[in-house]
Image (tube, rainbow, N blue to C red; front, side, top):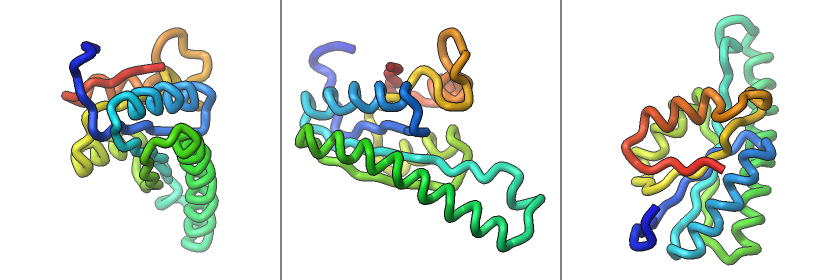
Length: 145
């Protein structure tokens, strides 16, 4: 990235993995240098739960995923606060790729910074499936850490 590129809004998607945290640390550096707002997103992927579970199970699953996601975004929000970086957090119900694409469009994000691989692909040699699909789906820069 060229030194004159400015970013006002930077998105860090997180799944709580070490790779996502590395991405968050890099995103915080970018945000601090650009006086940008950091947006932290956790996507609750309910998968097939809506089709195979009874409604009370779905509600309990949603509540557990929301709580887990809030924990993950809160951890990054705390890192941003320690670095004096403005931060907005969000927990959305959608597949990770769709949640990221929608968030980018809705919030006029200039840069996405994400881990190379997440919890679901820890053994991938280069880039995980979610990161790969996000890179291929967005017109804005995606930095992987």
